[in-house]
Image (cartoon, rainbow, N blue to C red; front, side):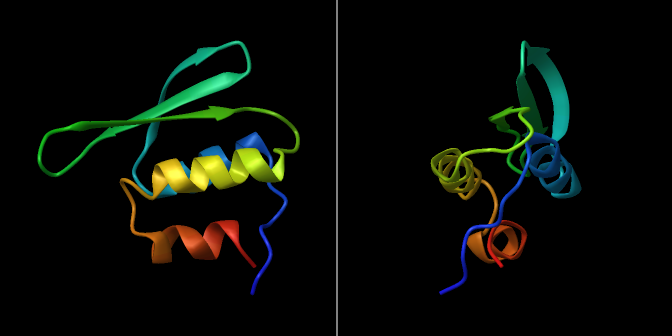
Length: 80
């Protein structure tokens, strides 16, 4: 089974931006990203903008993002 990649907050923000999310707010080191879904609902994710994210944090972001994005699209960005 592939391992979780080592990613920074900036890397995750770029990945989510490429999947349609836009940076809407930042408070301290936490960046809020959002997008409007096809059915008109607002989808919001928060990412800590750190140099290296802990594995548990990455798994939590992956799990939260998979509510809005199919896992097979996310998988190639987070695992390798």
